[in-house]
Image (tube, rainbow, N blue to C red):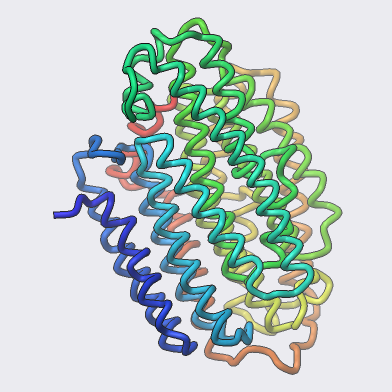
Length: 480
């Protein structure tokens, strides 16, 4: 019988093979939803799984919530795509490419999170990146092709650096494990890190941080992210910001745990704090200059990944819990925002903020849902990001007092920009819809996923179940 971890990888890939043979729009979209639903239901078995390593995969408290969240967002994005892709007007070839690449991405995302082998993780993140490039380019417009090339080149540089870091970390372990793939196991590396050469470990971490940090959208190699999320199909914005960034940051956190296990290495925390602060501050001020709604929220993704990175850099159970909760909350709320903004852009025929206004008056369910989603992304209570940012601030006040000023400046600047955009998009006099706006039934395929995400973000922020709280507490002990 196939292990659960590998079933979660091969089910989406089998679905991709099925979708190759389905060029018609409606059947392909429904099949995409069906495969995504089966994958999500299968991922729920992880919550009762005892964990442990099996071959090249490993299940533990750190990757379990991220995998379940990934397949949940995959399902809601597939439902959203039912209406959104119908409005995109793809021909049969582009439609097939979109659905096949979507399921290839989902399988690679699962493998990247579940892999215990660093080499397998690297390959999985590369497959997910190539699938993302195909989806971003599927429109075929000059802007989409440029965004896809930028994604391919910059993330290609990042993945090359990550490969070099993987090789160096393997060389650090080789004197103790000999030849073979055991030196690539995160679990093995964590156990023998204290005996490795600290200089080699330091060098490996630099390459892994910069390489996977590029994939996570951290400054300074972040410029691919706004273009990719603004120019690709609307649905890709949700999976890029909610899934791919998490997989890359998860790899950084695993590397940090290994390097930090050696008392003689340079502490990895300050490096993560530096990258996190740079991403937070640059994105917070850049938000005020964005006039394109999708590009605005892509910059917000850079800000939030910076906050999560900062939390892991601070380290300790409380800060790590804040980082994990922030990753989960950001994925839920940001994908909800992209569902709402993307549908509004199709209604108005433009994704410029000035062309989308008065949604609460013209489309109350969409307008108020988007307003709540933006408020949640801004870190307002009672949603998950408020809880994670509150934990982060209290931990900084207790142990890193010098972070309070830059952290507070970044949070307040970014929150003010989002509230300003909330008012511009949702309030005021409504702008006219485009003449070729999508049919009214597509409201349901947008509002369902949007409100489901808001409900889950509210649960994470205000009423975290005891079982999930225990799981996250166990996960927070892994990064160190």
